[in-house]
Length: 200
Image (cartoon, rainbow, N blue to C red; front, side, top):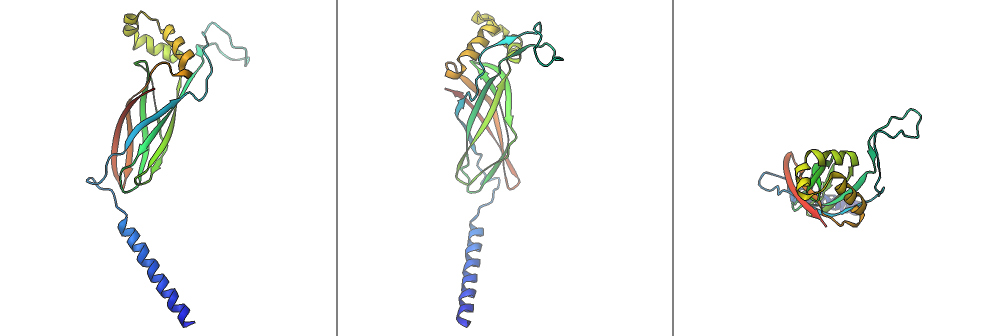
């Protein structure tokens, strides 16, 4: 009984020493040690495809009976898969990301993620961010913001929309991520990572 008690005491002391050593080895973030994590685009996908179609406000919807006419078209859905690389010796939390999506240089939508993502020390975590482009919204953006550029190209907004919506699954034109920023936090310190990318 005495021998068992001695063994339990020794085991308890060894466990306590191990835990103290582990706690002492965990580095905490500081302004000097917190390296801004890297955000890179792994790839982009078109996870769901609805074709190319549009009807204007002159068309009365069939259902429901009280539906009102409107300018509606097929959505173009992208998914952007990012690598979040943490080179620090401590975990970091990403709690905010935003970026602008541009097709062939024309900025069409700004999207982001409010998901809280923990990235372990010295590891890389992936984050998928969806983006839905509405056809009528894209048409309005092209007409207002990109009108001059389209004139120089000898193109009309519907020319570009048809090309993008019909060939998007093949990635036959570049899709850009612009003005990207991601907010990372650790031990009360905040770092903002800027990023941009083009795919393919």
